Length: 487
Image (cartoon, rainbow, N blue to C red; front, side, top):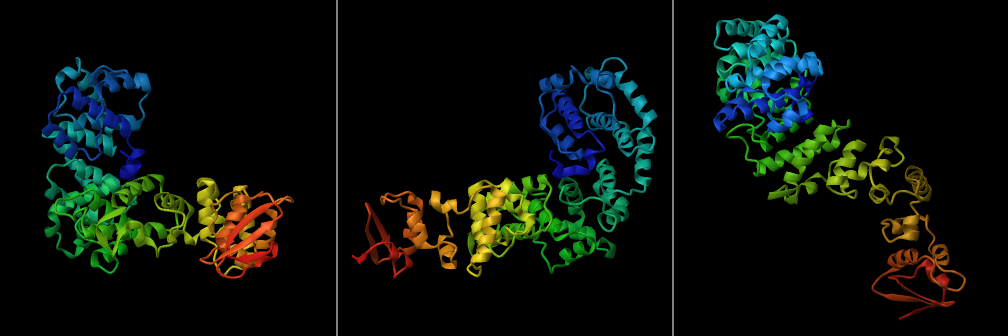
């Protein structure tokens, strides 16, 4: 499980411990496929598939009852650990066998849990799971259903405990509408797991959400089944309720890519491709950087759709649909360049004189940064403007950009620098040979040759002891260097 799915719960529950215990209990109980499926559907937290031996090695407990009895003695017992252990027992109540406990280990833990739960939502939820179907279970159910929730994630957790989805939604609908609208306490981007649960629960009841007060819930259910775009009623409803363009695009794309519901948009369809294009256009133009887990999730989506199965907007590559976008922050720039190229048109928003881009000099390798820098140089810049940018490039990289032409063949803006007067061909040529006529700077001669190269050959004849062949379309300033004769 990544923090992109249920970040809000990370500070409330030791999710690693919870999943370790559930996985250990399921494996040692010998659960079959149907039991695993039921467990997965009941537990809102994404499940993991661990190894019993690894669990025993990690925690030092041979069986579940030993953990209940000695966990606090060995590791201490934070409230997050307590909740994790209690909930794991609750979720696995129907599959754990008596032989996983010795004597009164389970009974003692349950008594302590009743004593300690108080108003703690997660401990009360665990008690409900452990006592479901019993008289005590009804009391815990009433407590959970009568509570006035103030946080979105807490309400969703409580709703996830109950089996009757339709009754569940109808009972909690007023609170759910409030906490998914004006009272929402979690962003979509790092809580896609929570929104997946919500939308999955609401989708079968979509046709019943016809009331005026149901517009928001109904709009959320459109995310996996349509292209929710600007101008449409679902999009405008979500915007009115505080959802950002990025949240809408991200939820729309992920719900389609991961097939949250049956009957949704097919992931390999043209409509899905348009949804992905819309997502990455919003991503690139977002001014603030994204959390690291979001970039990780986007990496997988981008890879899945980098090549279209069906032509989308007349092209076959996702990157070609993003030419008109402009990247607005360095973190996204670095991420996007890694997926595409520093020469992509969307990267032309880079300006080396703007300090906000300075971090890229460290996050990108030197050649990539130079390519990005070259893409920011334009024909409209005069020699002074270009010199300022070249100087700034040197300060950031601690490498001379001009050495790109003196020492190698990789530079891509030689012609622009010559035309602007930053590079003088005659001076550059003279500096490329020594007093005997031997070549000192072969790379610079290569660039000079490319600059004056054309279909019509011009030979710069013997100069001292060296022969230099330069190809030119028209007369050029380098003629001063030696006698010239046309071939």
